[in-house]
Length: 298
Image 1 (spheres, helix red, strand yellow):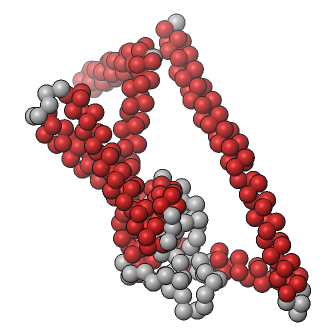
Image 2 (cartoon, rainbow, N blue to C red; image 1 turned 180 degrees about the vertical axis):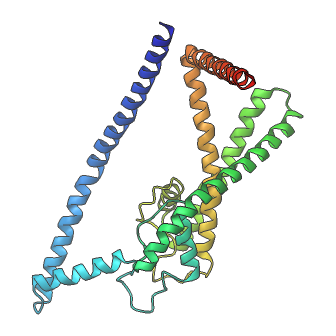
Image 3 (cartoon, helix red, strand yellow; image 1 turned 90 degrees about the horizontal axis):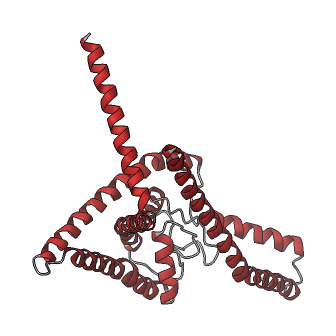
């Protein structure tokens, strides 16, 4: 009977999570539709008017020829070639840009504005990602552990000044989050807005979309053909992404632990049940090992 109640508790908690998750998706879909659908319709209408005005001004062109030219532009954009400017535009595959692209592959950001166009490049990208993504996860995990060690040192140093452990933990975590936010989320958008000519809001939007590995590709650093970037600009952006991801992963891990603690407080029987299950499992394992040892002696 106790096991049934325990299973029922797990099913209800899982069902609640499923309901909350899909409800969140439905709310998000509704709000995005309300916010973006009218703007999309206006942009589409504006583009059609521009095409009609273009045909009216250049009577030597007809509709099919213009549509073909538009398709050529779209194909160029999909292959990572900026259709504006001329052939002297900076290469998308110089070393700095290639380093940046390699970083977006192993971190699974995938902006979508650039991808290999050759068969050999696509094949290499597959195997490179297969090896690079696990390596990046291990690297971020180890980097997160190093940050945890430094956070522990900060807590111990503060304990010598303030003897209240819980207050020190909260203050240390607050300082860690605040300093990381300043270093990875506040200052970089300022630099991006200065170099790229974006507003600060656009720079912050790019930073968050990048570090959350959403990577829409609507804003990407170092892609404006009218600007002259320093050689290592995109490489430095790649290094920023790697270290910021490690910091963000640690912050999200701490947030998950806080949520688990909050759930344990609201459901005090859950932790007790989990402890009982763990004790039963360990005792059963010890009994099986003991029986196997006795049989081997016989």
